[in-house]
Image (cartoon, rainbow, N blue to C red):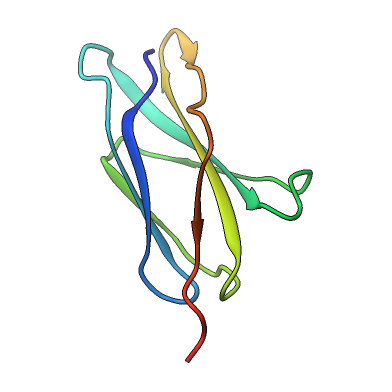
Length: 94
């Protein structure tokens, strides 16, 4: 399937980042796959698979830490291409 477009990330809390995107409507998406990692530790990637949606909250993150996110859509044809990574820093803990 096509890449999700308009992929954006916004820090909501010191431990949560909300992701949003526009998904490829012409393709019957069965799930999304998200890769995320700390920018300072790119070899330690986390993979999350979730049902089709236009947003996703990533929880249990470290405060004041720069994270990278990349998203791909999966259809019956297989996994699409991951987006270029976007970066967002979590808020500082209060």
